[in-house]
Length: 200
Length: 200
Image (cartoon, rainbow over all chains, first blue to last red; front, side, top):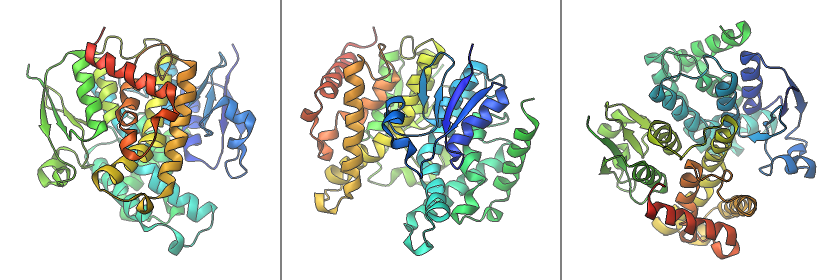
């Protein structure tokens, strides 16, 4: 059986989620670097694989494409994940809740502000102030949660931690000061340590 | 065992997703009308239940709160859903893909434009043109998909149909003309017929 393929941009936190998850579940994969800035996700060839024109895109060993970073990591956790997803139905639902919150209330502010500031080199004055305001609200909510529980969705490490760390760890590149969020900062270090050690 | 409780705004498609799913799986629930326009999702009492300050919010019979519409309907499908979620791992992953796509690439344009036009009574000139452009792109992608498959995530009706119909059926209130998307329009009618008939 051949391995997974991942079309991904190494600059994108959404793509790194897939890399980290594959590494944690110990599956081999080919990484096909696909640059958003160079427009490679809008080529005809790529759009035939993913009509949404977005990376990451996973191709399964059976040749089937799957898009949306959080859908991909949920799938990998179900297919190979061991302890990356709680077995109890309601605990798993809390993981889903954080995954959807990440895409709706975190990524559109924290990732987008980082992209504009760090990659497009926009000055603060040229960035919609809503991005800072809503990004701070997201970090504030995470700080509160991470004072109450060890990991983002409770007492178990899960794909919700993988998803939320992706842009939180790079929030400073978007102009957010993580020193104001000590529990978040400590959690980022613990998640990154987990990545270094591999799945336990 | 007591029933579910739903804090929801009847004007919100995200909230209706939860109502439809509970009806389809045949579970009783108390609906607690909670108005976004009146600021009831920002009250101290509500924020204590859901720090994200958003409806819908499900309270399980055990008293546990769960937020994020798509997380709630996934949870209900797993807990009680019968045929609302495919059993095969990759087919289920395609449902996840559409659920995340809905929150990232559909709802922020189609639901938001409807809210601004229909509820806030903004004129077209006062609405960010990006909302129409990206909303049309989302409907175009759905049209293409629904020419290729009976339901949005494949040949099985699933929570992805429930999720995507919520704002698609009301897209005309946001200024989108569904007559330009005949496969989408036919699918909306079939999903609504399914709601009327209950789960088969």
